[in-house]
Amino acid sequence: MDPLKYIVPGRKRIPYGMMNFADIRLDNYYYVDKTHFIPAIEQADRFFFFIRPRRFGKSLTLNLLRQYYDVRTRDKFDALFGDLYIGQHPTPAAIAIWCSTSTSPASPAN
Image (cartoon, rainbow, N blue to C red; front, side):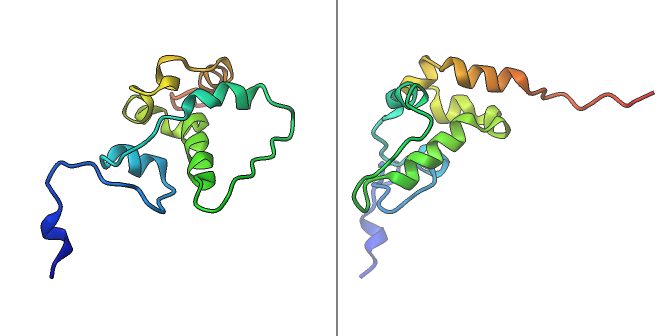
């Protein structure tokens, strides 16, 4: 019996065990928006102790933060975060990071 024949085309899937935020968002998996916690994480103390039980989304959350702050994924920001809380309310720290790096190639020295 082929279990894939019961999958309805276009239907969202459950991302069990997935740790790549971009894959979950771009491949139409269910995602519960927890990006409203990012401002609280930014305002936390210098060390942030992130303890949760197994299979509770720790790696996914860290991958989400990497995607959010990484200037190399800036071109995918709207696809990944556009309809999420943080896409509508970017944090000042992230804006400072994005604006402090240049996307244009360095000009040659004379």
